[in-house]
Image (cartoon, rainbow, N blue to C red; front, side, top):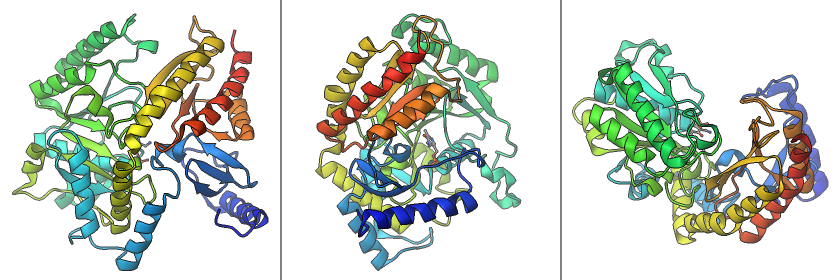
Length: 451
Ligand code: PMP
């Protein structure tokens, strides 16, 4: 799509690749050996690579195209907005920003009714922590091992202007704790209830030993995504909420990856009957068509900044193109029942197929997920649980599987020893089956490395 011929698309791809390897510095990559894939076009659940081959996008790029690629209503909204007004300063009002904030407030849990817009997930996290620090007057931030919250380093610390500083100078203050993860339990638990209780006891001890009066915030991904799609036991988040309330700690739910339909609910936290004080989002809010992130804010935190200015801001906060894309995305998701689709596809197609595959493949150690958000954890040996690739690394088996997936026409995310399956929330049952059949083939490679 978008080219007059396959040859034209191939020529564009070849030139793009050449220039990329000369001039583009890539995220997370060893630049010298990196061989990125060219993507020339996309539509719905599919992308086309530089050879003109069509691939089922089981990755939603970086788990962001929740509404699928090139959704006509979202594209149209961006075009119409570009013709009306493309940029405004953050201190002016724009109808798309106002409407996006309303639509988000209506969907976020409880009383999270004000929205601060950023351009990315990391910035949302930065600002959520900043709000919590000013609100509490405390500095430490608790977060979990096996979590991902973005790649900026509390950027305000390098800012050289005291008017812009709050009580958060210095990069110290991050304290890690263990979250629940039954398959690789830090607490040697043998069942979910035990894991839940032990993880909460552990967190309570960390809070006590760090000193509750020094802790501004606790940030956690509702369903950790990048670290392995690890849904928590049913009462864990309620327990975390109680501990935060008891000790005056601001609870931040990071829903950058798991929010906006991904788990088959508007927000993953909806399943757990818990309302955080702040909720960070990005990616799915507008499917990443234009960069956008943000923080949904509870009234008692927002009230801190009623009479004193909030010490933070961004030139592009609530950018009209990004917000127009968000309005169109959220409306289309509502109108088309996209969130329910993600839940139904998860329950009726993905989960049963994966469970059935796990019976047949000796390399499958664990399966976890919700909606259109699943991880297949691969091991060399099901008893020892020795991973098929090292933590934060890769292996020959994973590299071979990625190549085979692409050869067979499917693009998953490979993260350490896991295959992450995260297609658009709009995926059809037939498309999901097509991808799962490819996965079934590819797991034979993993089996050949397992004992
Ligand atoms: N938080 C979570 C939970 C994420 O998954 C990510 C991105 N994968 C981020 C924050 C950072 O988002 P961004 O890359 O847009 O800065």
